[in-house]
Picture 1 (cartoon, rainbow, N blue to C red):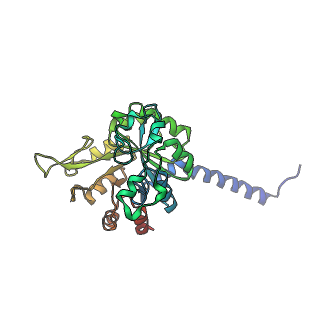
Picture 2: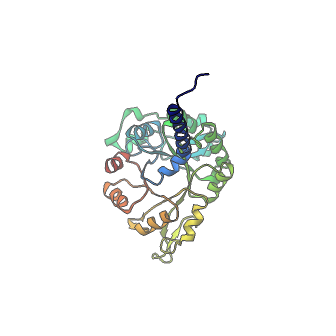
Picture 3: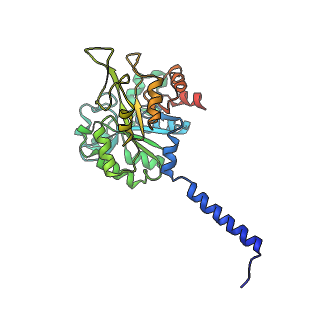
Length: 311
C-alpha cells in the first residue's frame, strides 16, 4: 500500500474539512429564497401586463426576458377541477366570454380569446399576435418556465374556489417548486394561507393587506379583512402575529391618491421580521419614492421601468 507524503495527506484532510464546512454553510434553495426576500424584488404583476394581455404567456415571457424576480399570478379552479391563471371572478373583462369563471370547464375556457381586448384598450401596445391568446393553466406556466423562474401565486377568491389550496399545494409539490425555492403563495384571506401552511409547512406565505378610510371617520383607517389594525394603530405584536405564519407582507400605500401608510410602517414591519412588498406601482416617480422608503419589493405592470431604476 502506497502512503501519501505527510504534507499531502494533511493538505487533503484540510481540503476535505473545508469542503464539509462549506457544504454545511451553503443555504438550501428554499433558505436562499427566503434570504433573497431581504433584498429588493421586482414582481411582474400578472406578467408584464402593461405591455401584453395580463396573465397570458406573452406577458409572462416579456417579464421573464427582462429579468423580473417574480412572475405574479392568480389561480382559480374551473368547473372540472383544473387550475387556471386568471384574476377576475368573471371572464367578461379580459375575454370574449361572459359569466363566472368557475362555471366553465377548461375546454370551454380554452375556446375564449383572452388577448384581443388588450389591443382594443391599448392601441399603442396592440399586437396582432395577442389575438386569440388562450387562458393558461398553472401546469402550462410551470412546464414553460420550470425552475428558471420564481412564481408569486395568489389563492384568488378562495370562497369561490373550494379545494383551491389542496390543488395548488399538490401541483407545487409535483413540480418541486417549494424545496427548490421557486414559489411564494399570497392571499388577502388569512384562512387560505393557514390552510396552505397545514398542507405544507415549508411554503413561504405572503399576507396581503389593504388599508382604506372608514366611512364613518375618514381619518381612521381599516384593513379589508381585519388581519391587522390600521397603520396608525398597528403594534409590534400585530406584525409578529403575521410573522408567525408569513414570510412577508404585501400592502397598498395609497388609497384614492392619498397615503395610507408611510416609511415608518415599512420599517416597523421589517423590524418584526416581515419584508414589505407594495402593490401595484406603475409610475417611475412613485417607484423611486418607495425605493427611498426601503421597501423590499414592488408589484408592477411595467417591470421594465422598475428594473431601470434598480439595475
